Image (cartoon, rainbow, N blue to C red; front, side, top):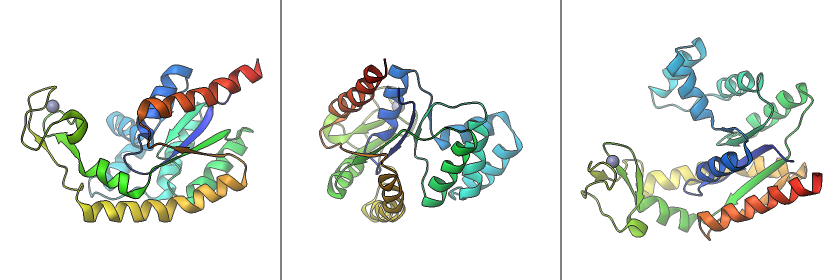
Length: 219
Ligand SMILES: [Zn+2]
């Protein structure tokens, strides 16, 4: 069965949610570099402290640091669903070398596709609880700014970086970095494109079937 998987996708494509659902159903560790970093920071390891120096200044981690995290993690794991990694072509090539050194390879890369205008609508309609951090959709949950959080009664607000300008910048950066990565995986015969306009459950069903059929083919 396929258990070395990468999920790529723009903001609001639900890749974190899908990675966590698939991970739970198939018993594969769901890994985001953000989560590894939080873990190391909490443990106060040297690499965690180094990462903190970037995070506290609001900077993205350099390729080299992200790779050290992933390399360290792969030292003790050989099954994974990566979400939000690799973020650059440099990281994708380096991940390949890390896996080759373990004599294993990636098995599937899902590219979650969502048109930019849908990403904008989803992101700009997002409300975040200023107390517990829960995220709600204005439209779907029928909530608006300033209303109490359904979970904890905290105040719902729009995140500062959820402005149209900041979002367009993130999207431009996403496309710039992701195009070479998806080309790279397509050339390797690993890329599967998934249209995620139809919502979380439909997408999950599709990914589930894809992995499950593979499981049956193996047995
Ligand atoms: Zn809350």
